[in-house]
Length: 300
Image 1 (cartoon, rainbow, N blue to C red):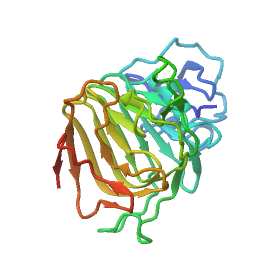
Image 2: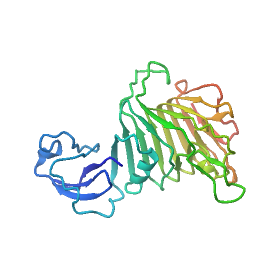
Image 3: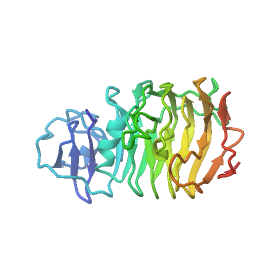
Image 4: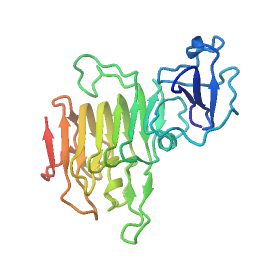
């Protein structure tokens, strides 16, 4: 279900490995050469981008560990497109403080499940195959985005109070105090176009929502959406949003959408944040707006 990986322990030749079922075990490799290949099979890599599949002589039923040390950075090469990115991210974010999902060039992924970061976690979705000329116009033919993420259904509907029940909650990521979410080099198609009213729970009211002291970075990406891209939720004072070489387009005629909104729902207002834009390399299509409520400070 979730692609496996191996990483080096504190010293020597010991490694901790996790197989595709999430089982964890300890293994001692025979010599230094094994860091790059085992029995001539180049499926084991160890420079923090590690995938292990069917590695010969590796005991998948080795000594199991209950969890990873929480400070460990986990860099996952995500090959399986049948598993929702939200499921995979949630699996690893329960085990690692810093998680990077590295997507495969030319593949189409789905992301319809939501993820809530814990304080001071870092979560990155990254496509290394994106071609970037020196000064591209985001979204133009001169910039190729080989990794595609489809968001084609609403992750959830509010179910806590009668005034909230049944209202759409489009959020995929909630970024809390001190946490960081980055997305780099992908093309996103969010096409749910849901007609249900928007939830009053502001922390699920945008595709990516952010709270006080959190940070979101969107770079070298194209996002087609029917919902607000980033929402600074109630109590979201001093949230930071960085936009670098990105193109935002609307895929709905139901509503205008915002690159960064300050929708508070039933949460306390008085919130706001800082938006860093690399203009003119940030482009928006028709129906995509910038929040002008005065709650955001823009740095261009």
